[in-house]
Length: 230
Image (cartoon, rainbow, N blue to C red):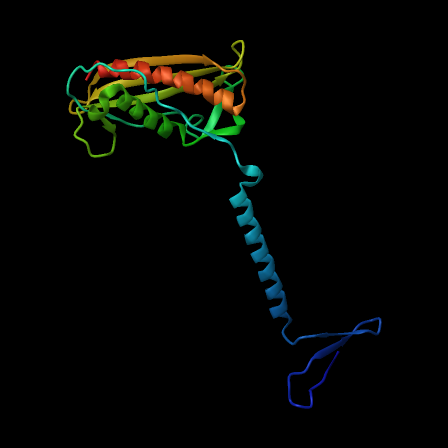
């Protein structure tokens, strides 16, 4: 390997002779060239990732929502204020994924479908909306909003999914509900609500449509029951 200095005092180049008698020239600072190449590669990867996110890519999952029933009315027993908290749920239900039970005690999820939010938050939002649609908008609020409540509605999601082992796919929704006095902490009333709705198939649209019908039935029953007690 030999090094020459140019006549005008400029920076020289390093000449390397290989075993075959050829030669190659390289700059005095090869690290800069490598770093530049790595930077270009990283930028290309970042831009490619952004394109995938913007287009949805292959990871885009169809998302579904629950509705709140509207064409019904609820009785008015008094002038109390009820606050609704998010339901408690086991980890298998505390997710955006949609539960399928192929056998008793066995849990799987739909591959190409998900809820628009975690199920407890979605259930709470649609339950409050159901109270409002049943003409109880001025007497029901969301827990944590600083309201001076007379009662609290506590609930536990026991089942919310598709069962395929009972003669065909069927949506099952079951929730346990308690009304508790805000000042006394005593349980005023308690009830378990269950509804079922047949599903045409276990595809995302069919399964979520059946679960929406079953949850609507539970919402109506629950709102009418609770409204007669506060």
